[in-house]
Length: 279
Image (cartoon, rainbow, N blue to C red; front, side, top):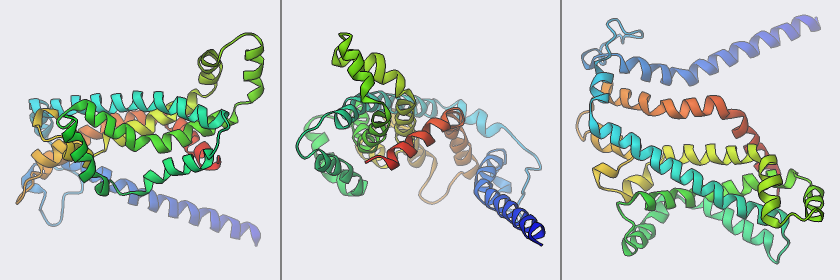
């Protein structure tokens, strides 16, 4: 009786998982299949679940447009710059919170994390005014700073969790051998916490790559737009959408993130777990 019950539970669980997986993956499939269709068949009833006459003209058209390649380049510059800057700052901040004792350390950490509670929209007005006064509007470096600021609180918490897992006795032994603080950080702590740095890098890159609000508010020159703002401003019209072209853009924009996540997802999971359980 128990064997039958266990077998039924196993089958039911797998069926539910398959249904849930189909539910999650269907929008991705529909996006990809739509990119290979002509606009004339997108509104057919019943719809074409599988493209009857697939075409690559949408991709040919897209890759021949200079402004799309410009958006792609800007996204890589902003995301890469924010990733490097965030990893550098988070390394020193996380190490300080992990290793040094100072007054109100927990309160300061709480205040840093509390900045994540504010919606981005509530910060944009004051941020726009500040950027205007300092000449950072329509500037890639300004966008890099904004994305670094947005990703730093959680990144500091994440990397601090990895530093907390490294025994302090290793540093004491290195100090006895004459190694200085920065030498300890670069030669011992950094290699041991490499998965944490990769997790911070992945998190920051994904956040910057998908950003819309900062990029569409702080940049209004078309040649400086990133992919999300470029897609929303150029490919999505006020009264009509070229859905096949929009889906083609979305598929192309998703490829770098998909590749990054496929190869480095274990570091992302490890970073999220460490950051979640450490105080």
